[in-house]
Amino acid sequence: MNEYFKIAIILFFSSFFINLILTWFLIKYSSFLNLLDHPNERKIHFDSVPVVGGIGIFLTIFLFFSFFVYNGFVQNIFNNQEIISISISTCLIIMIGIMDDSFGLGPFNKFLF
Image (cartoon, rainbow, N blue to C red; front, top):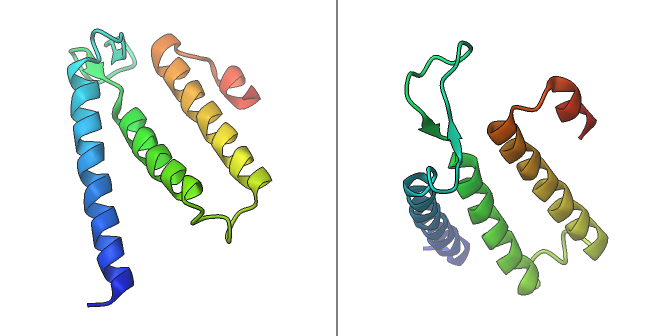
């Protein structure tokens, strides 16, 4: 078996299980963290549902991206300025998503960010 294929399989399954554990943890404690989407006239669900799936995916990707940056695997692809720009913009996008889920931002505020 090819060495790159083995690495890809290991990365896939490790990221899958980390995301599975993170998402389970976040869903379990979403009511404590007040990360719930409550029903109203615009929603189709009748009970409060957790809105943390994106946070689990973000944390998994950020964890692996940080690992690759720390070990120098992405320096051939991105320079330091690009890595900082990607990290900051990704964090801003996830923060806007969390704020929108929590407070219900209007379209102008989302567009502004």
